[in-house]
Length: 86
Image (cartoon, rainbow, N blue to C red; front, side, top):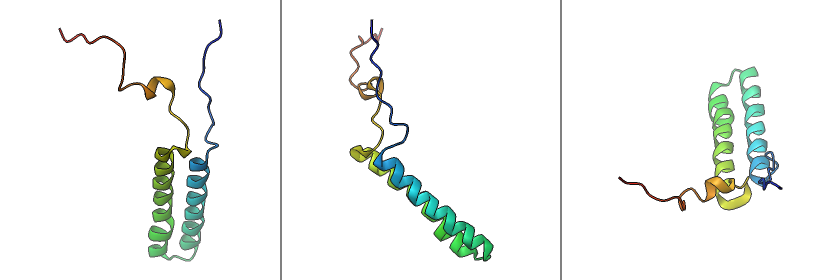
């Protein structure tokens, strides 16, 4: 008997790659800012860009460019299990 398993991209999706590239740019800018002791650049250009990368990645995932949800989670709202309200 064969089991059906969902395909796992291991983060190799456009959303994953875009998020990681943006975050790496943020880390580089933040590291340069720390070396230069430029704290506004660190917080805005470093930390801010890392947070932006996380947001962009999540938005792209929601647009369908990320890892698809497993079948169990996709149908969670339309469960076929009987209701036992008591």
